[in-house]
Length: 474
Image (cartoon, rainbow, N blue to C red; front, top):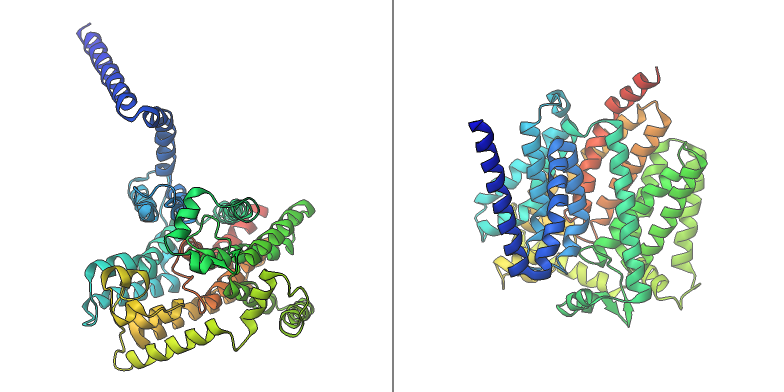
């Protein structure tokens, strides 16, 4: 009887506290407080879902990678740029405390994990680089150069390693890219909203509105990142459309591919053109089907001829912009070459570079006025070269090429044709991105970085995924 009274008292006290909290929210936050009340249950439920499985937290990571940077334009008071870090931390916590999943640590005993550790080790060693200017700069910048890689790769290998996880990964990339396309179409045909105009006026207008033409950027960090990202999705969709799937599925992939490539053109990002071109060449080589390879090369040759040697559709700004990518006398290209000569001179006696976080936006924030901060690198590889020297750049390129070679060898051994096509789409997308990263600092940016790191994991999981399908079909 006494226990019942105590439980009743506790329940009454809990309801009283809840009522007071509700009242305070409504009184002090007004409409926002009411919105919080309705959002709170959904937030709690979503958080509970995320913590159920590490793979769910990886989905949250992917969501944050796609949407967080664009959301900053609307909610600047919250550090949304750290949400990817937060999501990865949740994945680690979920992995530590989960009980329903048995962790098979054999899945991280591979060369992908080894090179990830080596690369992270080099980045950590850069802390003692005598040229480094700021520990804070290293902390912020290392997230994009190595930290996300060393966290995402093992988490995917260990906890999102099934066929259903691969399918979900691909579907999310295409879904989020579709939403980004709709957002981009709204920007181009309807116009920008107040937050986007405010963002342009803060500096990017000079690079995103050229001769009165908007370079569409959707909810990505900028037009360059959106161009490469949507081209990557377009290439994946095109390769999937050629796969051994149902006609309805192939048509959906084909339509998405056309839509994504159209948005790529609207971004006016010339460097993004290398994503489908380079990726398509990698796909054709990886298929080892010489008939398909010959047809694909003829098609690529026709596109090159159209852009390089004709003036068809020259009155269209986007076509002119793409065509200028093949002009060796382009002013922008010559400026980049001159900057690279300056970097070569500066780094001649600095084999380990100027320190992580000393160039680009982090350099301007933490070491303004320095050579590396004030000289645009305009390239992922020039950034690595500038910050980590020729030693770091050589190591980085070796790792990227090694992963590509190992992935190709694994794909060639896959027996299931549907799985092979999906892996070829990831492989081609990866090659396209690393080629395009020469022209723009793409690889370490969101969402491309997270997408590529997860792609690596699935390429390395190819034998396990193939075995899962063979056992399922047996």
